[in-house]
Length: 146
Image (cartoon, rainbow, N blue to C red; front, top):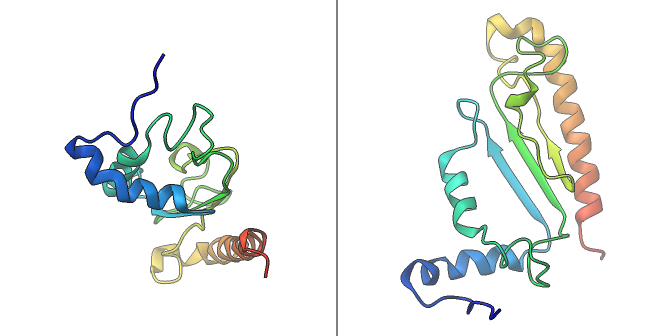
């Protein structure tokens, strides 16, 4: 079977050429995505929908796809889902990254500024410290050798 021409010459594909080339040109991916109403922002979802093309940016064994490149996902939301937090046990609300993707999700960001959440401040501080430590380790691991 003959492989389709890449990139196609029609309008939508021409408009997507640059974002796809930028995506494929990266050696490491860093996604910072807030959680709004228990989901990722629609703008981020639309961007993914536009650049995720089977056989081009992922899958099908192409040498120039994004496969195998390290990725970090940093997400945040107003609440917390860890032990002791108001939403404990609702982990389905926290995004689950791909197995090779590293994930940071500091919790309870409003605890320092909202009086009803002040009792959760120790959980927030622990979560934030863990995210900072993990971020530092990832930065060191993913930085190019100098």
